[in-house]
Length: 270
Length: 298
Image (cartoon, rainbow over all chains, first blue to last red; front, side):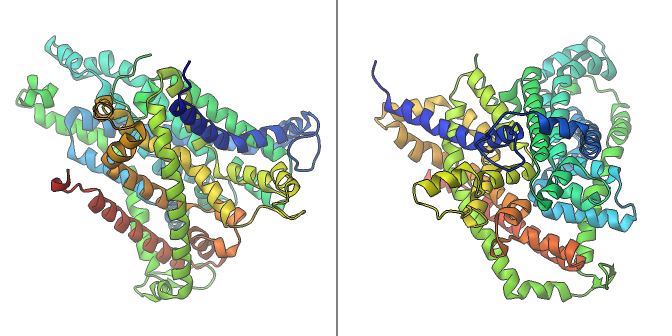
């Protein structure tokens, strides 16, 4: 067999990138199973004591619960806002809906710290400070671009001929919606929800600036602990993040055509 | 034929348009209110605060003064912006150089491998900056194995740490951004017609030549927007320079946050933020101009 230098170089390059991206994760996971209190890598002895400490600690658990609640609500709000907008663009080509989607896209131009400042100023002026719903509504607006783009991919994938056929056969809009649109859109809605959920649960700066002192989310607690010095339970929290994230995206790849969702329109055979 | 564009035009009774308008109003009223309240109002508010009068104790009163904008003319602001831009430029160069070929290779894989890469990239992209910064801290610390290995071969003095410094900040930023940039290039590169490469190959071009002289120039607009993405993210990054850098490596994000939270000078933070957004809009306009393809050159 001829050794193909190009293939070898390509594999090597991708392998190095994968290694670079995996390295910090490997460090955190292995340190979380380490027996000593010292921050040391490679780990010395295997132990589950930090997991016991994490799940037995009221503070960590309440932060985890708070983060999960915020993420679920933020994802629901973002999807509920994006769904009518993308539907109106697809179904009516409505100019207002396009403008709203444009605002959602323009938010990507705003660096994270600026968005955090804008929103904290907003909540400050309303006098509604340090509340959980502040974080929910703030996360939903900043992440709105994600459901907007994923749902519009979903709508564009619906076979319009099928909808047309339903109409020709006398179906009303609501029937066509139930028979064609809803089943076609369900996986995309779930994917958008999962994506926003995962990003919200990991977000630090906005949560900290709109409600940080009173609503301690998991990232805020990890960072607060980091400032006070190293504690291995932080690694356990980190491992939970990772597990949740990867599980969510594996689920997404089962629910929908991931390459298409990420913007590939050219067909890809198995 | 307009029917291709508007599949619902088949049945269009006279009262249809009127009813559509009501349906649309019902659909969009909620989202419009939410977006107006959470995006448009805060944006105007920020501009207003940047012009407001600063009161003691982190408060401000409405006004119209340019006191805070005068701070933008100070050497401190120029230095911080200059450093943020330098960091972003280094990050963008590295990210694009790595992400563009990586995305290209991934789009040429079989479906299973592609899905696996996408899951891996999405998973690492969504990880909290807090977590990544923390992992880098462990990795680069004195007791870490990396420092140990470098000390063993004599590249690092014993007891010395690999952070805080500029390379640590840059490496962590590249780490945070690489999955974003790869996923950003993914759609455009996956749309690329394989026939283009085949044609180039028939004409005797090697794969590397094809990549550098045919594919990369075709994607000029994408590459420039990818650079913009890195710049936006770098200017917004807060934790990475804070934890892995020293004060000279503090980006504008830290100064915005310090002005707002620690110094209690929200108008100054707002003025900084307005300047940063204006800078981003200018960069966006620049990328649009640069990615416009001159007709004659094709």
